[in-house]
Length: 445
Image (tube, rainbow, N blue to C red):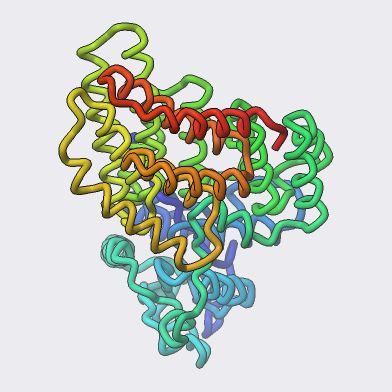
């Protein structure tokens, strides 16, 4: 079953006086209008007081404003808290924020009056006059919000206003506003291993009170030290909005596959693609699930199954590369697996220069990371370019961040070596590059 996107509701609570002295039952407005309309749009509503959390109210409030895919703000009575929260939401999310207000119950302030709000009708008794009509209108507006057109005035009016929806793992870690002291301790802990990272977690206290950035950095620190079971445990303890982010769901799939639960990892990643659409990162991780499945079947002598798993892995990586051809990671995996087919897939000759162009472009733009140089090295091995492979591998080894990175590249080179050795055409110089990567993977991060 697909997880529904979260919709955060910003509104007053209880009964409040309207513009002409009538009392408005906002709990009834939520129960009879907002909640059913949101559910009819196939979203999951969350109201500020529905989830009991520790710590100050500001932390979970900001977390939901930032991370929930959709939001509905009821501007009736110009409640100060609602307007403050709406301002925060407009500053951090370009789209999918729907405004509603009770028609005739007070005027909207000047600053928000031009915005495209959706009126609903109340009777003189302050209760909903036509809930069925209003519910249908709001449901349709939420469906329209899926088109992801900017509805934040900041994003509409200011050119190149920064987009805070960072979904790449390393960018997220750099940009989140995690506490500087905790980040330093986690950086030290990653060098010392899994127990050190767990000690930092223990000092944080209740995770629900920690900033989202700190929790994500902890999550990725467990990945860095290959404590994948801790990643799965930590994900279960996160707040619901944080668990629903693309990054966390992708990395959960990554971790589940690494602990041997490929079936659940596949389910998590497929649901994410259904919810958020194709992504180079999501398909890349899904391709790894199928790739591991293929290798296990091949080692077990299950030839027919292995053949099918290999085709499935190639297709996942290819779809990932087609989703964003700036990301060479799924592309290099696709062409590498094409090399492993017997005979090699001739399609790799068409795809290989496209992948090469993608990684060359990233390197030319400056600040290439481990994966850029490792991809270039692997491409050179596939093209039998000894000088290019040696040079790129040296650059990759100089910028290793986490031990699983060279381990992954060494594994790919091993697979290429085994396939080519079986065909009698393996160049021996590639063995030295593979050995250097294996040594780097065994070193302290």
